[in-house]
Image 1 (cartoon, rainbow, N blue to C red):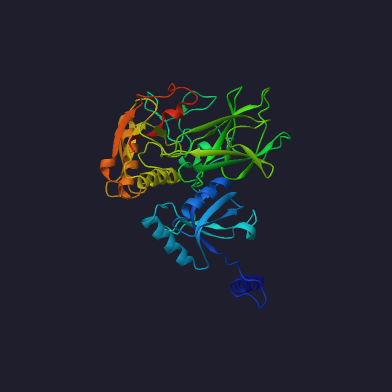
Image 2 (image 1 turned 120 degrees about the vertical axis):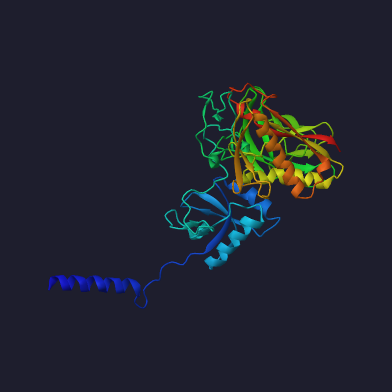
Length: 420
């Protein structure tokens, strides 16, 4: 009898779970977001949103459960519609890493929310999100892993001269996050407004300014242009600082001034902020610019998604002036051979490891493929092949020793202006 009662009770519980009583709260029905990027730093999410807004209506919201800012182009209650849009973007847009997030974001969300990130292809949950930036307090990791003489990929930081690469691709760190204008508690801090604009037409330019302690030759921080920022006092005896603005596509500009008594051409005070103007001039014949914000997957001649910003800046520059002719220089750290992952010839995906092939080759070959993938992206976007040349150096032209703590600087792509 007891056994029959237990079976009946279990059946009743199953029925109760299947049919909710009148007035009982339904299961939460979350919105579905088509996400094109995730960022740990709000500043980077804003920058990515502004760039993507040229093609789509884009917004960003925080996901507290992952402590990341999600950049998305669609919010809908129709999960099928979201998945179809994500698949379309993966195939027909630069956003090949697009996925669907089903859950609350922003003010609707709490840190314990149980939203789900969904792979639109497999329809399965995504455990690890491809984050485009990492905390500034992480060890300095090469964005494009340098090659040692032994053919290993290496990570270089202040404590290790050479170790095997063990950090996954998404855990790389961009230059702009090595130092930032985070909250400044210094009571001697001042408000600044770094006005970045083109010298020829006064058009505002997105970019950052590095503040350098002129006495100790030490970087104090990196601050966004064209917005009010609080800059900490250098704390040196003289108060002298150097302000350096280096925006890709424009000549590097430096201004030297005294932090305590800011004076100089065009420098003034507006709304209690020190306004420092930077009239930026386009690159000219003979100039060579490093593409600091172009990153590659490990062992690959394939760009990471966050490289779009700077590559598109180069594209804009070439479209703006049809007389520009450039040479794209590829460099590595060391000359050892190793695995090379290449984009397939038929693929038009320049920012994903989807549809790639694996081979083996020299460091020079790797540097060649990295320079060529930038050229091919420009070709695919209408730039005449006659305006571009490629030069592969491998590790022949390092800027520091290959075992130096800053050896990651050897791994780079440079753009030389041949004609303008």
